[in-house]
Amino acid sequence: MGVVKKMDPQWFYQDDGRKGPVDTTELVRALLELGNPRNVKVWREGLPDWIDAGLVADIAKTLPPPVVSAPSAHTAPRPSPPIRAVEAVAQNYRTLVLLVGLQILLVVISRVLTNPLLGLTLLLASFAVAVAMALFAYRLMAGLEAGTPTLWAVGIFVPLVNLVVLAAISSRAQAWCKRSGITVGFLGPTASSLAEFRARIQS
Image 1 (spheres, rainbow, N blue to C red):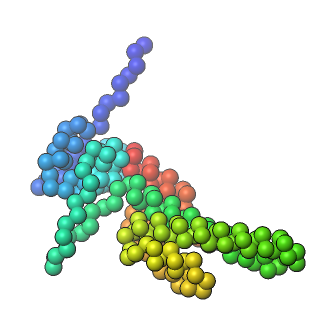
Image 2: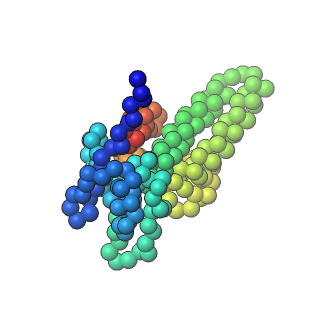
Image 3: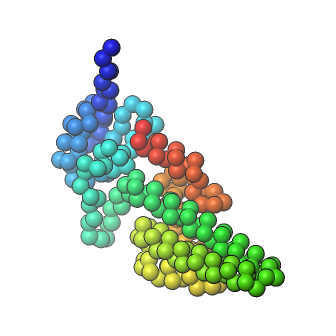
C-alpha cells in the first residue's frame, strides 16, 4: 500500500469578516498582505477557538517580526507574544522560583550543621545559587520587557532586598502567564500547563 499523504489543514482568518477556507500556503500569502499579520485571528478544525496567527508555530515562522509602533495618545493593544517568547518567560519564571526554594533550603541546612567545613561548602553553594537567580531574573525581566533587567538582577542578588524584588517579579510574571493561559502553582508555572500550552498551539 502507498503512504497516505496528510491533508493540508483548511484555515479561516478574519479580515473585515471571516475568510476561507484556504490551505496553509494561501493563508500565509493572505496574511502577508495585511498590516500586522501576527495579530490576525485564524482558526482551523481542531482548535478550540480563534487564535492570533503569531501564536501558531508553523505560521509564525513565515511571518515578519511583530510591528512596533511609536506610542501615541491612543496606544493600540500590544501584539500577542510568539509562542517561544511565552515559553521562555514561563520557563525562566519556574526556574527562578525553584532556585529561590533551593537557596532557602541550603541556608537552613548550613545553619543547622555543626561541621564548619560542610557548612562553608553549603554557604558557597548558596552563593552560586544566588548568582544563578540573578541570571534568570535578568532573562525573565528582559522577556517581560519590564524596565532595566540589570537592576532587577542586582536586586534579586541583595539579601533582604531580594524578598521585595522577588515579590514584584512574581506579580508581573504571574500576570503574564495568566494572560497566556498558563497555570501558575506553588513552584511557578506547572509542567503540565506548559505541555498543554504547547499542544494547544501546535495542534
